[in-house]
Image (cartoon, rainbow, N blue to C red; front, side):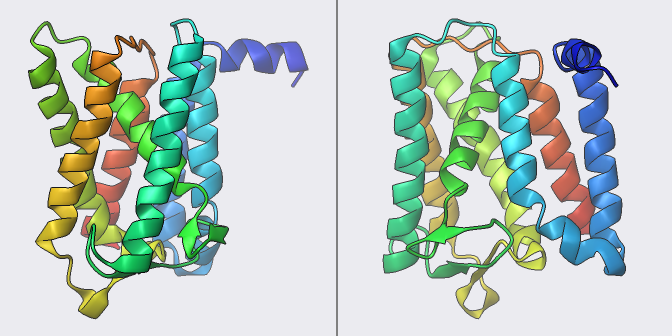
Length: 218
């Protein structure tokens, strides 16, 4: 395929949406087949990077200095919150990361901050389409992230992403997720950052359905 042709396809949201659907369907199959499951598990960090890269390409608003600073703050805050969580067991409960999310620093995957930003970004895109008060948008965004986490937590140990002490997910994990997600959404809403992206819903829904199917079948 010629480079110009590939660039044209990547910039077409409908083509990318179709690609993402097939990408996650193949991912489900790869995870469920014993011979290929270990290989596909190791692709998780690359999948996150690819998703974020595609979101950046289709970001419709101007990347102002304020936007870059806020996005960077969410990414770094998410990473350092996870470091504190792993090292102390206070924030989310006692857990440890496996190899499924790639390279680690202080026992915390480098990619995890990007995952926080990706979830805040995609859920914000959805909530900002709703004509309502910012407080409700914040609650909706945090609520969507909480529901996402509830499902993801059931699959994460099977994908060697992380495991909980005694295999029990503490309620404080979900409380912390909602509180932290609310703070990040508050930061977005009250700094006036607007996010429009035709791929956000596809990325969020594809990932969520991916985890739902694996929860049922894996």
